[in-house]
Length: 112
Length: 112
Image (cartoon, rainbow over all chains, first blue to last red; front, side):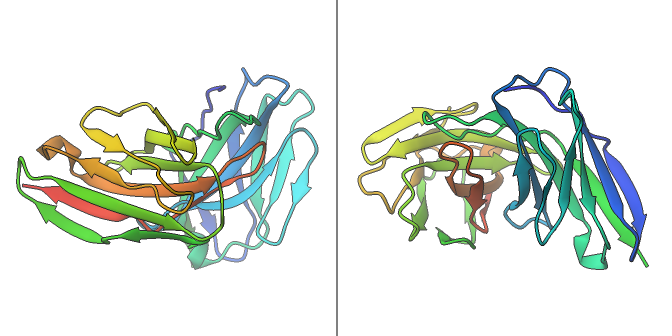
């Protein structure tokens, strides 16, 4: 699976959009981009995933660049409860196993 | 948490003791995983299973054993506990094809 690079930390004002970047310059054509978050020391929570098109759900939007070498997770109206560590993961959609490699993620702090 | 139940939630062991961490799911997923997370770090894969009777090693399998006799259960065993195994252990399900994984709430294990 391709390696990802994320900034170690970011701040965001409450009510503003939080834009979390992820670089995956070695991504291959059959690898998906996944985002998870981990609040305090709870289990990681799935947010969103995509292959090449932009995706949106009730939690967030995922913007993937045309060359697929980077992506951005957007939380449109950040709240204090969005303070968490956010992980960007790239993996092949495989019928063998869905193993995921977690890096150190980005610690997002939402401030009042 | 997404149909994944981990027990116990907390445990303190003495060096050399053994124990089994339990993971049970009610989602009928074939794929199950065990990860560990050390303080301030990302998750590392210990073992995974793609179905009853089938298990395989992940990134950090030494010191652990697993079995998968049913679809629902995927226990993780520590035979001779060592201080280096102090960590938070997460069980996950899912990940077939491009589907995301879903995590339990974790077991916090301290070995003294």
